[in-house]
Length: 273
Image (cartoon, rainbow, N blue to C red; front, side):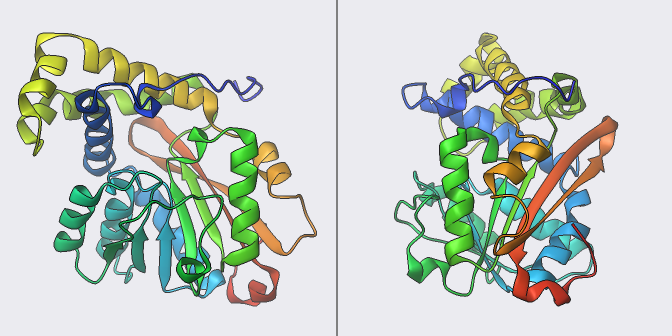
């Protein structure tokens, strides 16, 4: 399946004209799936290595969405006995209400930038002394924007860490199904807003289930391969050293991580590309 060509099909969660209640249902259910399934636990060792190699204690979380992945990864680091960095959540479309709740829940660990931030052109004031993360979101960008994000990170950051919960194989999405269906089913009862609309989309109709299933399937086709990531990063011999690896989680799940750090910090890590 790794030889499948990349297909940048649409996802409901990307469509600005899709009902907000539907997009929220997809994002909220995904965050609960990641948390309940402990699907980011396997990222703790490589992320610790990345932080050591970059020397960063603060991380600019790009394309943060509602903030779920950063909150979950911070929690997994704490559970493993590692102090998390300070995550500053950013997005082109800020989720200030959700981010405020995340900051209140994890003060000193989570904060946010309330104005829109373009991941391809990070302002110097935000870049300074910070590494960058893109957790479960890099596949949303077509190659030209993905390449621009990596280039901007090389120009203005102490490193960038990217992860996706599967490789380009639609069968990998099956590992999400058991926990994902449960998370979607209870979401109308646990959400903090638009409960009636979400109940109608989830309990009275198959809309939320069908849209979530489609987005999950399409995400597997959008994911970049290791070769594509390295090509977009500029190959070997550049200013950054790039590391690719895989991590595992429950139900046979397998994701990947890809990070780059300046070569002048290479002595700070024990792993090789």
